Image (tube, rainbow, N blue to C red; front, side, top):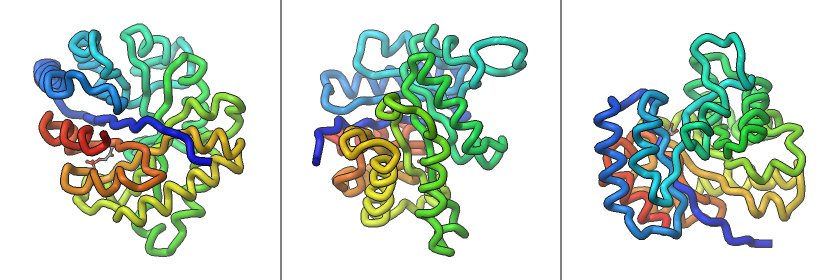
Amino acid sequence: MKKFRKKIVAGNWKMNKSIAEAVDLAADIKRELAGNVDVDVVLCPPFTALKAVGDIITDTPIKLGAQNMHWETDGAYTGEISAAMLRDIYCHYVILGHSERRAGFHETDALVNRKVKAALAGNLAPIVCVGETLPERQAERQREVVGGQVRKSLAGLGEDLDRVIVAYEPVWAIGTGVNATAAQAQEMHAFIRETLAEMSTAETAAAMRIQYGGSMKPANAAELLAQPDVDGGLVGGASLEARSFVEIVRAAL
Ligand code: 13P
């Protein structure tokens, strides 16, 4: 059963942009995208710029997302930010389990799962990242790896599973300029959807959105986004400039 899924394009600005730069970028994107209602657009600046970017886009359909959060609601967790704090500044989304956090900050599937549950309880839509490394793909283990990440990171969500957005980000494609081909992306997205169906129902899986991330650029976005199971993009480098980000959003229209 094929359901209509609104495409969703998110810019993950990672650890880039001062507040002033972030405000300028958000204002440019807002101006360029005025009137767009057919694609969900999300900006994910660093924590320091969330409030200022939120103020710029407050009167538009563009939504705010954070790049990480803690799984507890409050308490003695120095340096951490809770779901409620993100809601407090009008965040609607939060990226969880990004490969840079899995690799650099020891985030396991079990930990990502706690964060996903906390995000949902805090009324945030989690964008949950999964993806295999280059050695894993070379060993043809991508399905085993990604299937495991999906099952464990999204375990035990029950009826809330369909509030999750999955981002397939092959690690070998992130920041390398080497994107997955459209065929590789489609194959993995279809596999992720099958896995989601096994975890819930075919109907739930058909309604869920799966973004592609990894060297998505204006030059390759249209072909990737035309694949039947590619429901949007999670864009890193190309989201740091208004022109390239907006071109990718337009390719999703
Ligand atoms: P690039 O688009 O820079 O490859 O980054 C992708 C990414 O990690 C988005 O979360």
